[in-house]
Length: 193
Image (cartoon, rainbow, N blue to C red; front, top):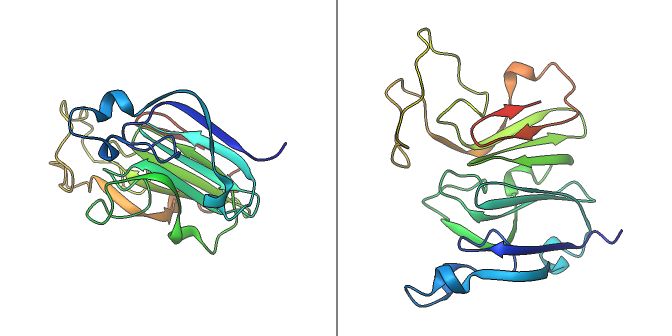
């Protein structure tokens, strides 16, 4: 195995990592022209030539781990799922190193609809991105359980119960910090460890 990553499909937000996104084309052309119908390599130069050991596709973003334990992300960043404030970066169409985990040896990453979870070599789990449904594991449960909101609230606001909708800085999931986590999986709006 060479650690080379290949991608194809709809790349409207740069989630393919091959330099294709709608913003690169004239208005009205991007949706059609950002489709990649055959596999293209995600160039190893983006990963400093280090092979990838794991990749995970999220809603419209992608996360990967190199053999050196570094996390790279690309695609949409509407909820901070690329580990940067959406005010700073809306999307990336090529892989970007996740600076917040630069000093952490990551062994796996899982991308969900709008959030991400990483596990380091010591078994600590980190999460970041959208958390409107509690999928990051950082918010206490409300005293009165209620169904989730019917519509997606605007970016950068709070839900009625005061829960912040995004967290772009990866943080240890403290409620499970005493456990040694070995696997993680993210769904659209939920997480399993």
